[in-house]
Length: 378
Image (cartoon, rainbow, N blue to C red; front, side, top):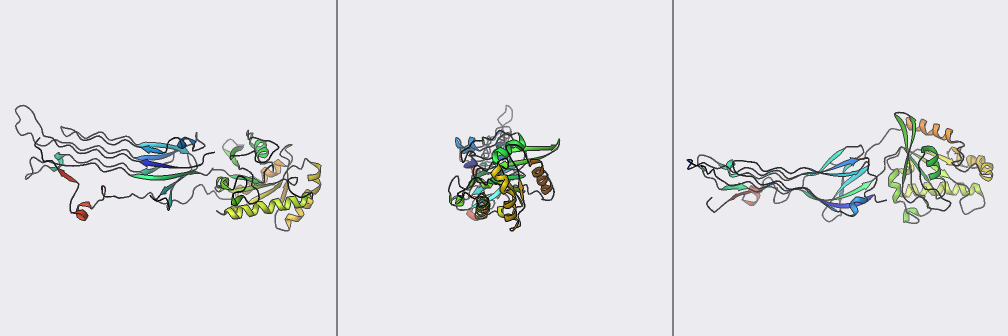
C-alpha cells in the first residue's frame, strides 16, 4: 500500500500585460488599448472516496497548473487559466515541506468527500498600457508582467478513517474477525503476516448508522525498531476512537497458554507505547480469540483472572464460529457512544511564500517597480 509520497506542485503564472494602440481608419490618435493578462491557475487538493492509496503519485511527481494568457488589443483581458484539482483519498494529510526538507507543517487534513484545500495560488495577470493612460502620459509605453505562481514541495500521507482499530500479533485472527463482522474479503491464511496492508470493513447497525473497522498487519516484539513489518501501519489507527486487542493464546513461545496470552498482551501494549501518538491511552477492549478450541476455552477464565489484576476485562470469542461476537459488538457500540469523534488533526494555515517577483513592496525595497517601459515605437 502506497500511503506516503512527496510531490512538487507549481501554480500557473499570470499573463503579461499588453502594450498596443488603436489603429483605425479616420482615427489618427486612438490612444492606448493594451489589455491586462489573465490569472494563472491555482492548485487545489480534493478528497475523493473512490481512491484508497497514493499509488498514482509514484508515476508522476510534478503537477503544474496552466499559466494565464497575455493581454490583447482593444483592451481585451487575457484568458485566465483553469484551476488544477489533484484528487487524493479521504483521510489524506497534507504537509508543506521547506526547501531543505528539514521542516514540515501540516496544512491540511481532508476527512470528508469533496473537501478541498488551496495549496498553491496562481499568479496575477499583469497590467496593460491602457491602465497607465493619463493627462501627462497619453501614449503610455508601460506594462507589467504577470506574477509567478507559487511553487511548493508537499508530502501526502494517508491515515485511514475508522471507528475501531483491530490490533494484535500475527495470526491472532484479526482478518477473520473483520470478515465475520463486516462481510469483507480480507486475505486469511495459516501463516504469519498474511495481512500486508490495512483493510477496512463496515458493520451496519441501522440504515444510517454503521461502525468502520480497520485491520492492520500484525505486530511482533521489536516492531517499533523495524522488526517484522515494523510499526509504520499504526498510523492508520491514530484516528480510531476504540481499539480491539485480539489475543491468541495458542501463538507464543510457551506451552503454557496463559503465559502466552499475558506475554502477547504486554508485548502489544509496549509496542503501542513505543509508537506514541497516544495510542496506548486509547480505550481498548481485550478479546481472547479461538475459544472454539478446547484448550483455549479451558484457560479462558484463568486468563481473565490474571488480566483483571491489571484492571483489564476480557471477552472470549471465536472468529471462526461467531461465538461471543454479539457480546463484543454490544460492548463496542456502547463504548463508541461515550467516546467523542476526533475526525481531523490540528492544522496550520497555508502561508503565502514571497519572493523577489511577488514581493508587495518591491519598488520600495529595490528602488524599482514591476513596471516595464518599451523603448520601441508601436
